[in-house]
Length: 218
Image 1 (spheres, rainbow, N blue to C red):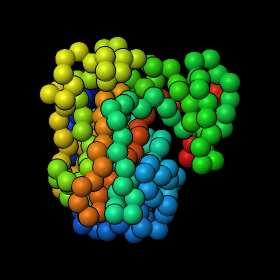
Image 2 (image 1 turned 90 degrees about the horizontal axis):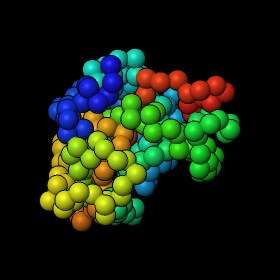
Image 3 (image 1 turned 45 degrees about the horizontal axis):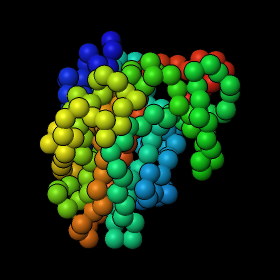
Image 4 (image 1 turned 60 degrees about the vertical axis):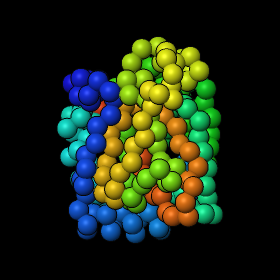
C-alpha cells in the first residue's frame, strides 16, 4: 500500500489523544535524558519500548510494514528558540556513506551521514510528530500547506501555485496528540512567542529497504 493512498489527499492526519499517560511519562524521561534543541537527532533504538510499540501501531495504519528510520527532537524554550522558513525535507540518514546511484549530496552532521535519496523513496515515506506539550498560536509550532506533497517536488515555496500564506494552516494540538505527515509536505516553524516549553518528537517511517550496501542509520 502506498503512503499517498493511505493518508488523506491533504497529506496529513491527526491522531488525537493517541498516547497513554504512562507512555507520555516514559517519553518525558527519555526526552529529558538526551541532547535536545533545534533538531537533535536521537537513535531509533533509544526510543522507549512502550512508546515505540504505540507509535508502530499508528504507523501501520498508514503504511503496513513501515518501520522507524530516524528520530529528531525539537525543544523550543526561552533558552533555545528558532524559526524555519517554508521547506521540504529531502534527506535521510544512513549508517555509512556508500556510493550508490541516485543518492547524492552527502553530508556528515553530528557524526551521522545525511544524503538525498531518489524521489521515489521519499514519495513513500511519512513521519509522525508527537506533541509532548500543548501548542497554540504563541508556541511557534508547525505550519503546513495541505496537498503540497503532490506535483512537482522541486518547486520552492516561492513557486507554489497560489498564495502560500492563504493555503497554509497551523497544526495546534494538545499533549499526547500525534500528527502524521507525508514526507514531502511543505512546512515551516515560527519562533515561539511565549515563555513556555514546546517539545515535539519527529519519527520518520519507511517500508523500504535501502539498496545494498546502504543501510538505514539506527
